[in-house]
Length: 315
Ligand SMILES: [Zn+2]
Image (cartoon, rainbow, N blue to C red; front, side):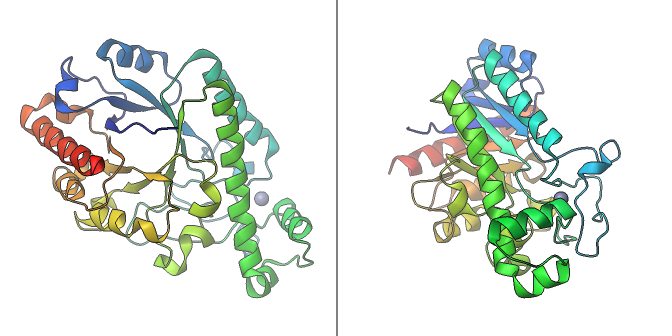
């Protein structure tokens, strides 16, 4: 399947009627929202859905809080993602929501969000914890990996690589389930995934060790990988997206597309740097970017970046 180059804002804020003139051809928005689909149809833009997977309000759903190696619920802040993956009812809810959306709408793409184990990465100093060591998750690991190690300490000291691989396979398995549901209904729908933007070695391998996002394992399910390149929030420079793209061949399998999501807070520097990358981003999402298109100068900057990326991609 040919993956289209899609450019536009993330968020459901209103866009001006002539936004297509600025190179925008798509909008990403949260969930299957009727109004957002209608707005896209009116403006002749591709509608792309961000689908929340493993993220819940822990105050309302305390049973979903993963258990850390100390046997206690993990520490978490406002923005935490990831849940205990032994919670079958919650997992069924995700599939029900996806099935309901697919029965009613025809999005051009669906980006799976929070498809990770627990933690938060939009920060310069992440608080990283291994999880989930609830009895059911530990039992699942022991049976699946044919390992007899029930204490978190023993799992982490003697079977760390098996534990990591098990978690990555779990996440990739759910990605495949969701992708199969999507493609059965809409064979041409692009399946994307929002990714922890760290390279393999950062934070002691936390991309796989903590978040369990393995590009190789996910490649079968995911057409487009979308790392969250939020420079200011992550304490990084504006050239981060460009650096990430130019190194992506080291860890993203050939044949997979990569498309950055940039943060409107980092506009315009992060976008103009990204547009200079020798490895082009396969389209661009601009988080909270809709309001920029009310300003002709900012919209013009976006338009120039789209042109540069399209030219590079055509080479
Ligand atoms: Zn668990």
